[in-house]
Image 1 (cartoon, rainbow, N blue to C red):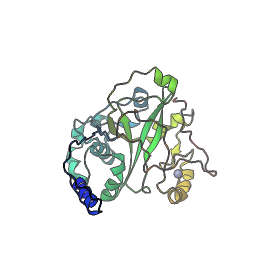
Image 2: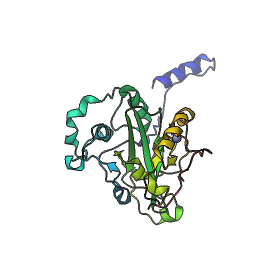
Image 3: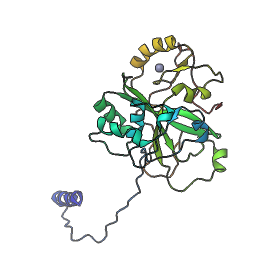
Image 4: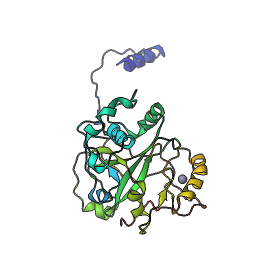
Length: 274
Ligand SMILES: [Zn+2]
């Protein structure tokens, strides 16, 4: 209301000669705002689950980001029930979340990194022709000693291919989101870049991969300098369209552009999943 009154005052002061007598109608338009946030528990898509690369904590609150980070900082063997919240309760208050609200949005991860002296990279899945591809969502500061990779998953995905999308029956509601820890980065991403079963070593910042760890180490030296947090343009509608206020991960994404000296460049388009 204040801006309106101010406008009225200014209008009269400009010497228009007009005086506002009354307001006869006031219309307010409101849109449902649904920003992309990590939400409560969601199962991984089957094909991703089979890769056994992620730890998915079964939280019942909105704090999946906290539990995913703690599962990474205090890793448990399978027998230790890494998917249970209570496994991490003793560490619940060891992280700082000043000025952050749950569910945590990817754009707020930078604040978390600063407060906790660690680097957190967030990746997401894109569905194209029925196959999933891992894409960077937030890759900010250079890798710190404490480094955690998270996957932000959804309860459903709209296929990027129009023909496949036309055959999908999707809910009318916007997708829910949930963070999980990527425990085995290579196991998660390797199927989308090579059919070979040997371990490959990924650079988390640019997703280039190498067959030898020594090559990766050499690469990281200049990758950290070259890849300041840039931007990657993700495919349109990676989140379901029509959700007012939903954001794709277009902010704070590291470029995945090709570099001539690296040994291999992953394709970030649809690719064979196995
Ligand atoms: Zn790199």
